[in-house]
Image (cartoon, rainbow, N blue to C red; front, side, top):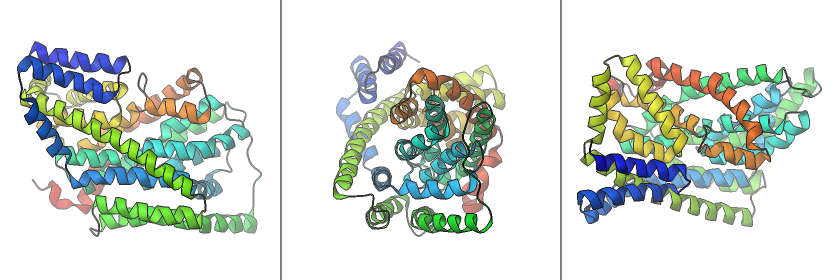
Length: 437
């Protein structure tokens, strides 16, 4: 690896550490390499445009818009009410409600930030009233919101499938079981930690009263619950592509938020459209710059050099996977999941496939890693967003966040990494031909 490549990577890392916008950090690295190595910048710019000119990428802004519409339309209220009927009666029940509802909402929006903005705004007042400290509440919501990146449909998995040439459906299903495992771990850790908290439990309901109220909550939540069935059923049944399902999710969410839950007004819809447009613009500029930088690294054989370097250190599969995970954890700590996927995929795919890891299995490993990166300092975008949503100070959030990372996220990562069955069971069941070669 040449000194110019190392300097370009150093420029990228320093830019991210000092808080430079991610497209500018990648752009600086790109400009350094093109200037020092005399690459044709017009060819690279044309290549970047060609790569992002993909129909499948339309699914990402559409899912972003669906998430914004759900957030403005108060669709999350119905989901919280239903989940609370089943687990909210216990001392740690509200924490479990926050985790499970984040998973359900994530299965509709496909976005960690939309999940946190909606569920966090609804759960924080309830949890504070019940006696949960604000720092703990914000940490739990931050730890749970990346479930939107694991439970399909996931914008992150669409991006990985596009950049790696893997089936979108296979990548969607690869993260389902890891997502469920993470939900269980978060609920268990929350239950243990809640023993030390002075939490007010709601009065118990019995018999016909509980059945009646649960029936009302379930009926109220039916329109919201239909949405993931439409999206996932259409994709898994081969009726719709991911892009078509994303468009259907928007068409369903708008009338659902306006006329059923009556939370979405004209102003809210306009805000959803403008916020989604801004988010999409940022994402596409980021895609463009990261893809050019990744293209340069590939042209310079950096992925092959890194792969050969790791394989020369050891041929032990367990150790190589551990080093790959450490690398992705560091990447996740420095940049958001979108940039992390675009950077890690071309670099790490040759390494993991070289030791017999299927790209679909790696989709789950990458998803868990970068989901954890969303709450791991120094970058930790979801941690800071949760602090703003809940009105909590970061120093009060750090200790519980590290507990959730160590005892929920890392065990999920270890299981996903070293037990391939966890990631490949559902893809093999739905797309067996994908694993024949």
